[in-house]
Length: 379
Image 1 (cartoon, rainbow, N blue to C red):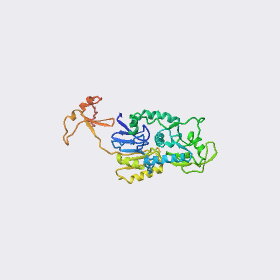
Image 2: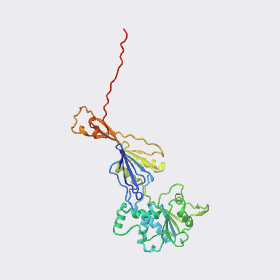
Image 3: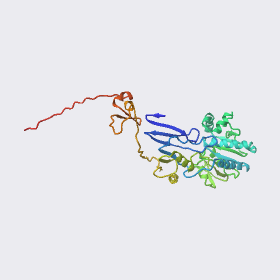
Image 4: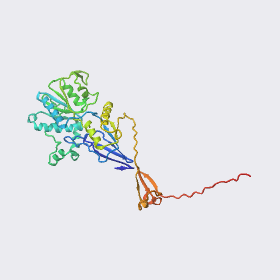
């Protein structure tokens, strides 16, 4: 799209369904803003696209700094093994999730795992999120935007979002947790809501387990549990023991160090601006990436929040020649009488006589008659 000389277009970001990276071009300078992105395809999403036009400036997320994710196959294996181990010892498994994005990926993994393990067919697999139910309608609608696994399944008449073993969690009045089960519940940070309620209810039993599949922010209960505390304070102010097992398997759809490094190598920007990350993580990432490039070719910046970034872009200005000037090739060194017009960051060179035909401008002739007063000095 183009508006008043500003061109912009988008690319698939691979973070969640519909996530996009935006490229903006102003005056010949292209800026790509990735937002949250992931280059690693999964069971339903395509990886982030690589722009065909290289950006001059890349604004890229730095969530994971210099960390790298484990391979998807190994990650899925660890996840399902942790869930299965909890059920085998007679426990209940809580998986705190966000309503959109990773939840749908985990549902695909668990439903397929249940299908391949007949001994689990009678074990309840619940999904509890009011927002997620509405999200599922979006996923069932935009199958054309997903990867070949989903599109091929849909083409054969099977809707992969109509799960065989996943059920909606009954109301709290009807909910019976007297047997082993798996519950995926929001919110993912365990700050409040059903996931927090179930954690406080189940955390004292050693048979139970918590499997955390996503990123947790410092200051939240989910992040605090990574340090494996002996007890936590409930929402009601009481203290309860934490005896259940805690397993962290990252299914985060944020770019890691490997993906970010490969993306920069593929796009070759002149300036890289790191955002969306802790200050120290951003600096470590910038230093690690800077070692791979000539500082005269690529500059890495880690601005603080609200800090302006000023960049210089020396470059040639190209003008399009139109009208009678374009009829004959000019001679080297010959003087050229023409008008240079700038409109919507584009230059046009034309003869004065062509102004009214090549543009919406009109030619106006001004006649000036200067008057001078002359006084002869006295003799």
